[in-house]
Image 1 (cartoon, one colour):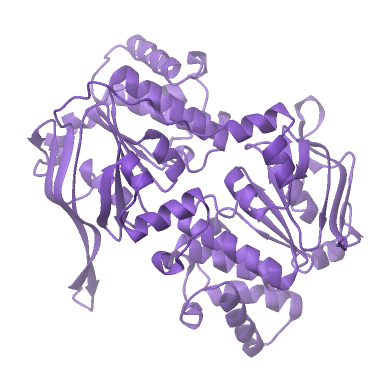
Image 2: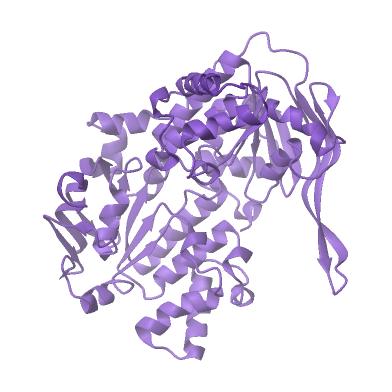
Length: 543
């Protein structure tokens, strides 16, 4: 077998932020090579140094970064300490990068044509006609449908999968030798995730480029990578082929990562027969208005005729792709948006209640959002965040009593009560999600709606969160509505499954039955994409 040339070589790399005693050693002695046509995965939890290592190869780290030791060579050129003109030739030409969240990487004010074309203009100086021709070629290469019609589209007019395809088109514009993919599928639905992985595999085969794949999702690593480097606290603790790592991991940290899968809960006994919450024919239609007088010409049927019931101590998993109506359904059940149809809570209809009549029910119906950093106020300590609901609902008039309750609930979710005077930015992603759960739990609710609470978390933290939710449910008899596109987590938590597509329920039933013998082609496509990461029929999951 012919050994391919090395296109990226990192030797004994050290990266430090800050000076003196306050300095942080983000990367410590990292060494690995990447060969042409090869995919190397950098794997590890958040904060392990994966992205810092990759950004160092492009010299895109902030000015506070220092490189006490090490060497980085890209296609034969040393980049550490290189002049700007050398780096400019490396960036885009030799190495390109695709970031985790395309919505924050793309300019919201510029069209797709302008953003992809900018790379061609800056590096190649092409005229407008040549740029448009090349942009259309790139968009076709990455499988963006109706690419000519999409040229004038702004990022918000595209789906998550389409935006990620645009980012890949930008990265491939100059046909780089190396593509750095930094968590490119984390925020995507499982079906779109599988499509993006298939796309990268196809492009790699066609263009012969090397891929440095940064992820915490080991199922993706097994599917996409040739070799794996496992990082922990800035060091590579183990590296080898995919087979060597997955079949014979030697380091305890690697073994722990591989074992960190959400565990399915024990079957429940003596489940209550009374309903806690139910919906019948629930609809949320948003009017489409056009013309000068804004006449209604149609409706977006975000939720269309959903019926279900949920008992205390049970979990209903709501699954489906982005735009299927999952979150809209949850908000309608909480009466946070207008809806038609029947909603009952504890046997009483609440769909016709006014805002003031619903307010006393709020403490019994709580929600935990996907992004705890965005839903927690950065100006308040976590103690203030958690106790706010107690003050609003008049549950603990004394401040000392409120702080005592906050301390109890922090202990319940596995956080140190003494940390209540710290702020959200001082916690990790998993800890912030525990704070969000504590904020809901402190009001002693009967129903908790969890909207994608684990999608941005590392696999080990996901498993911890699932264990926590199981524990809290068993202790307090909580009912959960768990909204997610991550079917591994749903499988570990849910008693009943409700599969949504384009606002409608296409399949529902006991979780075991839906997972083992799904009846609908759409459900089978979702399960195939999530559990095997291979979509058998791409027509079922149109982008």
